[in-house]
Amino acid sequence: MAQPGKIFARQLKERIDRGDCPLILDVREREEVELARFPRAMHIPMAEIPARLSELDPQRELVVVCHHGVRSAQVAGYLCSVGFERVLNLSGGIDAWSLNVDPAVPRY
Image (spheres, rainbow, N blue to C red):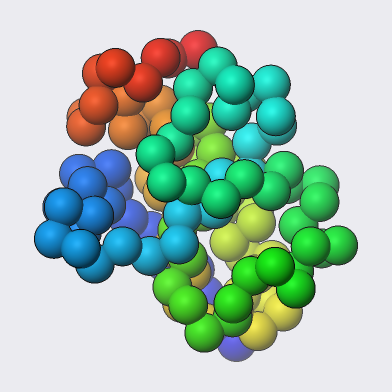
């Protein structure tokens, strides 16, 4: 079984800038997404992931995002346990994105 990897905010930004963009999966709650949107992310709240697996392509590389990287690490591990092989967790979550890449994204 594959294990999730991790990616840092600046690494993800570099990949996006060069057109090498994995699917970004935001697993925060709707209220959190409304406070601070992650650019180009698909939003599926953590609790809905098992019921909505069919919306995700197990062949595509995924970067899972949450507020600080804890929930996304759990989701990344779960996705690997059900057969997804190309899964990365955004270390530090959207908070790290705001601090290191895009200060226009509000911190909360």
